[in-house]
Length: 426
Image (cartoon, rainbow, N blue to C red; front, side, top):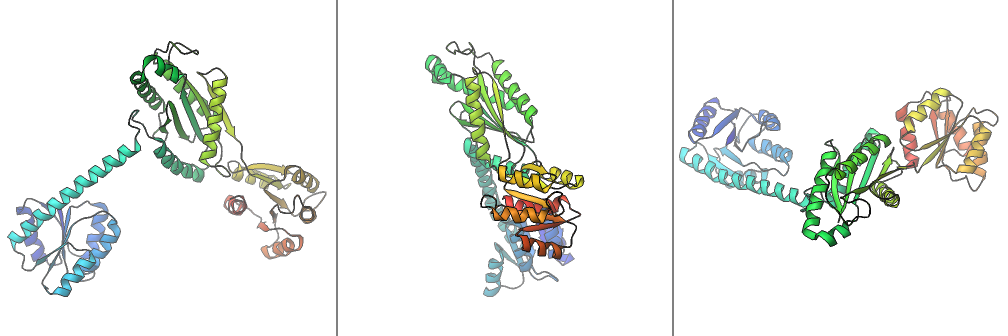
């Protein structure tokens, strides 16, 4: 075992290190609590022997901080002290200690305590290994040895949040073995199970990035999550999977599609994750799968999810238009107008989720547009954000006068835009 010895006395540090070495273990020594805390952040140890009376952080204080940092991971800590009173024992146990050694240290007692705690540490390690195995088994489909449906959604939702932060596109693929019931009826369920294993492994080998997630969705159906994948990449990956299954040349004499095992694949791609969730994308991929089956099976059908939220931007400044386009391209559907009259017409026709307009619009200025929109029942509840070069105080006065909800002051930046927009689109 690697045993961390925390002892401020150089003489005791040297003597105790020799005892640890003689007992067949590796001592790592530091002279104070601060150094001990720094060491355990980067160096794994199996046991800690801690002097209680030290300058700076005491042994009890160091142990409390260690237990807080280690969280649920347990390392045995043995206090070394000259105090043998009940209060000292009680305080040590409450601080997170596991045992005591009284100075001067008896070599026989030290070796016995190390052996006892070593057995407990071994049991902890065995339990940890077993728990990891059980966790892995609970994540894996027993037949195909890929992830099960529950684990897929747990992992995919984490990846979904990551892609949302990075503003990446996301693809879901639903993969179904064609005429699998006919296969089972003719060849038997053991052959069907073997078929599922072969197909699962072929799909897995076709997904070549560590971030891709594959699972058995149920029965003969599989599901894949592909982060940072655009439409053409999605089609390419899906076709690679379809071809890989066809290349297995697994006989299926009862299939009306082809005399070997084939798959139909439905895919759904979303260029943004605002206004949509992973369940929506799975439903869309399932619809695409049914379309692939209607097209004759052994083929791929990909659908794109359109942003659910619409933002109407009215401005004549090309810099503002470009900035909003860059900021919102993966968050929502952006509609634009370059004058007040077109803004009014588009608002009434499309009923957007949010309107952003410059105060100084041609034909009808922004203040009048806002006032007109707030007077109509159909558009009165649409949030409106003013943008202008006026001071924030001046904008607020104008906003209050005409009923706008927010204001943005030029010059704009992407962070300001997203902060305001997301507040109204969440």
